[in-house]
Length: 81
Image 1 (cartoon, rainbow, N blue to C red):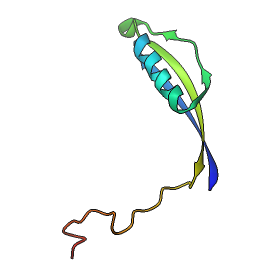
Image 2 (cartoon, one colour):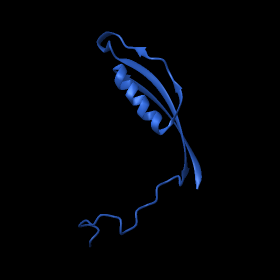
Image 3 (tube, rainbow, N blue to C red):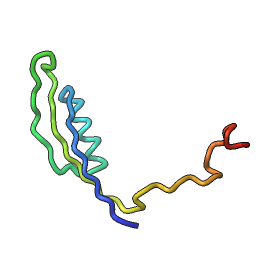
Image 4 (cartoon, rainbow, N blue to C red):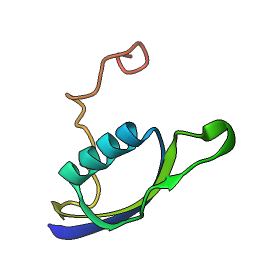
């Protein structure tokens, strides 16, 4: 087992409430390491905002999921021959 550190950067764009809900959902699963101020959009996008979010998550486990065994694979015409 090894520790895997993932670092993700996201731009969120939408109405302020939707962006706030998205940030809350992301924070429930990862640590927010950077969060920008709300940037109001203009023109046809007036009423919407944009925010930058940077997340980090540390997990322990194998770096790659295990491959399914033959018993776990679905039976199809090709595999039943």
